[in-house]
Image (tube, rainbow, N blue to C red; front, side, top):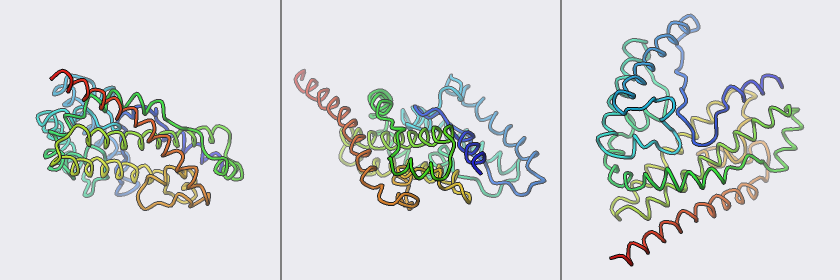
Length: 284
């Protein structure tokens, strides 16, 4: 059991900041079709990435990020439209060439197929946020990442006899969740400062919905029997419909302090924007 827990963690651990795009597994129809489908999906993905490089002039694997929302998605309607065009083609490839009737949630499907019109309608606002989100927010969120977990949670994991290596990976995953939470909060604050009144609330809602679904998908990775223990209390706190006290009761206060620390860090970005606005006002 201990070995299995560590393997699950290692298999799903990714560099924390920023989060490059990760391939999401598609549900298999049967064991017999796994090899054929995997090969087909790989071909669809490869074509998608080739098309991305042709359209956007950069390698996909090194230059596309799920967190924060990628520049390709928030820079302009033209880039959003071209990216979503090739993403829709990839989904069609999965369905028509690989025989998938149902496609799993992915960040690109969320943007391009499930909420494309909302992103298109909010692109003017999103484009105003791109530089600060990818510079100031990223700098702050890199610093605020907290891999440390509460003493109560650490004690619980030790009682489960999770190895030292497994504990480190658990903490790393907890750090990823603080990073995601920070970018969600920071992007929201940037929108409130940079966008027109008519754009603000719908764009904040759009950003929050993206990160909520992102965390729901992260939880699915750990939702197998006996594996839910690997999803930290803070990760559960920021995942809709999950209970932060599922395995370690009374961890809410610790998570509140973590959120407060993130909020204080994001405040630095708000102050930066206020200083910018003050300078622009004085120059007029």
